[in-house]
Amino acid sequence: MKGEATVVKNAGSHYLLSCLPEWDLFPAVLRGRIRLKGSTATNPVAVGDRVSWEWGAEAQGAAFEEGARPTPEHPATITKVHERRNYVIRRSTNLSRQAHIIAANVDEAFIIVSLYFPEIKLPFLDRILVTCEVYNVPVTIVLNKVDMYRELASEQIEDFKRIYEGAGYRVIETSARTGEGLETLRAAIGQRVCLLSGESGVGKSSIIKALDPSLDPKVGIISEAHLQGKHTTSLYEMYRTKDGACIIDSPGLRGFGLVDLKKEEIALYFPEMLEASRKCRFTPCTHTHEPGCAVKEAVDEGRISAERYNSYLGMLEEDTKFR
Image (tube, rainbow, N blue to C red; front, side):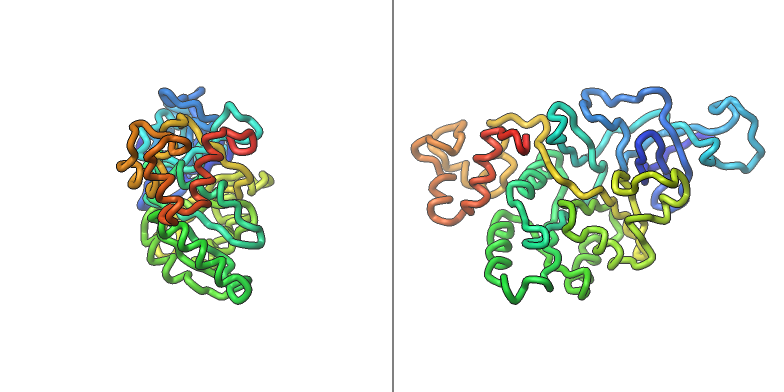
């Protein structure tokens, strides 16, 4: 028996697969050490990957009854990882030479943030946005927990929206507790394969539960199928909602380093800077010291936010905290 399927859970060396759009899970392991051509990532297989698999007496060296299917004791074997349409990758801040693929083949990434509880770090968010731009992943920003600070920080909310809507990103305001904005978010996700990611504590798991109360991202229907006792916070997993969406949940991020991006390329992945840079006097332009720089002029005139420009300068400096 053999076929193709999508990886819906990654627990280190064990995986769960399903032949999407059907939701019929079965376990699998890797054959040997599969490495993707040119990849430096620590995980050769990511949630969302399309893979080829084999199972049966010939693949496992054992006898199976007709009509049987892979089990945790006799899993399928992943034999090939197909070329990715796109992916989201980050460099570990603790292991600066290693990178990890968060998800592959996603229709859109929804980055969950909160202005407070925890307090937002704009350079952190901007690094995620740049990575999505680099690897062709459409992205929407979800501003969560607005019920907790709307009355006290309405001006800060509008400032945040001005910065990121001005950069070309959609911002959806939500509250997992009150339900505000959830219907808008549900409609935006639709029945697609979408990544929900963000910094630890922003309420990502609460949003997933609010979108479909039958799901439990901390324990999970899928995690109960096998590998019990593992730390669920380290698992990457796809959930199927009652509305037919496939949501990829990732552990809360505590750092996000850029991967395989040269200094002179960074500005290309700030949409608002790319647009303004077409009028720079010099090409290439670093947008730091050159005369006649249209990007610096746009910053001075408020057409590009100082916050985003400062994030860009921080990436140029390759500071050790994020790079």
